[in-house]
Structures are given as C-alpha cells and as structure tokens.
Image 1 (cartoon, rainbow, N blue to C red):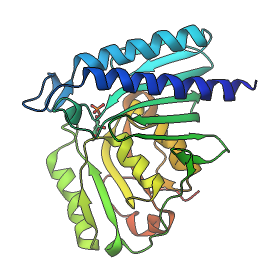
Image 2: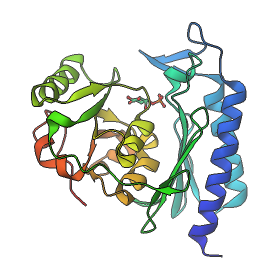
Image 3: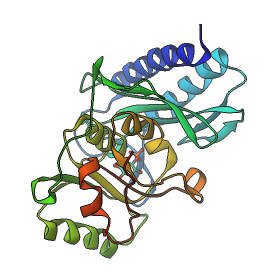
Image 4: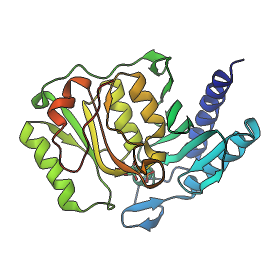
Length: 264
Ligand code: IPD
C-alpha cells in the first residue's frame, strides 16, 4: 500500500478514536471546567489525554515520523511529521459545547500532505490528501463562488495574543465592506467552513501551526485562496491567516495586518 494512503487511513481512524475519547471526557455545561494557560487560553484534562493518545499511537504506526502537538511541542523529528491539535475550540469544549474538533495533519517540511479534522459532537469528518481533493463525510467540497464582500459571511478569529484594537480594525474594515461577522471559537473548524463553502472567509491576526495544519491541506484541495501562512517563522511562531473564497481575495487584500490570500 502507498505510504500516504496508509498514513491517511491510520490518521482517519486515530482521529475518530481521539474524538470519541474527547466526547467521553467532555465537561458538562456550566462554568469552564479547565485551567488557564494564559488570558482566555484554556486547557482541559482531555487536551493532554487526547494528545498523548495520538502521539503514542502514531509513534507505534510510524516510528520514523516526527510529532508536534499543541500541548507537548515537538517530541520527535522525522522527514515526515505529524502536527496535532488534540482539541481545537477548547474554550467551547470546556463549557460542554459542541463546536470543537481533533485536528491531525501530516507534513513534509513546509508542504502539507494530509489533513484530517474530526468534529465528534457535530458528526463531521473533513479531510484532504495532496492532489486528491477534499471531502466532508465522504462528499467532495469546494470553497464558495462569492465575489462580493457585501454578500459574505466572515469569521474573525480572536485571541489575546494580539491587541484588541488590531482585532477591531479588521472587524471594522470587513463591516465597512458590508460583510457579516462571526467568531466561532475553533480556528480549524472556521477554516474548514471556508473549504466547505459555509462561510466565505476566515481571518485571524495570529494563529499557530497546530490550529491550521490540517485545514491548510483541506483549503488547498477545496480551491480556497490562502495567505502564505508558512512563510517566515509561521511553522514555529505562528502567523496571521486569511483564507477565503477565491473570488473574494482581491476585495480582502487590504485587511490591516493580515497578508493577502493567494488564489490557487
Ligand atoms: C484556539 C482556537 C481559536 C483561535 C485561537 C486558537 P485552541 O485554539 O482555534 O478559535 O481563535 O487562535 O488558539 O486553544 O482551542 O486549541
């Protein structure tokens, strides 16, 4: 079996198992059942447990591959590497909400090869393999055909890693263009929604590789326009990101502090 096909099959089955583990550990609604790593930056017991599960099982299946996770950083190196966010949307998850996912990517240097996002409480698996297209629960997906920002829904991801005034400037620019805004609390799922065509763009002033690695593959294969996230120190320090319907890229090229999205 081709090495990438085997990696895809194992990535899907492990991400589904990881999602089931997260579901078993999901806190009940109420005040956040989590601790703060930083301002508004939550971590739950499940983040560590899911990451350990994926790290151990991937090491067993592919001992030659590297591994990078949100919680443990880079624990192994290899010419291919797995980049994992055990729970993206932790703030939602910690409140017993459903908008969270497990994100598993396989990369070769700066090139994504496989992206698998499993949202267990939403019943969705979104995945892509380089040059083989992107799918939602088995059905091919494509970014929207929207060209007019006044018809667009745009998610603007937020974290305390950048000043609120910069966040407000991005929102202001989008609102002035006539876009409708949202912030859903999971960068990976927001980006996946662009690839599915449910929303027209996702913008964030700073996001980390583990949040976006699987989505980068999915967006590329779904024909979305994406800013060059991996340029500079993107892989190690994070970067701004803009992903959008290809026809919206020219209109969104002037967003403050966010590089333009490049059409595929
Ligand atoms: C966060 C979420 C959030 C995004 C932040 C991320 P986490 O990841 O994706 O939507 O705006 O930039 O840090 O903490 O839930 O894995």
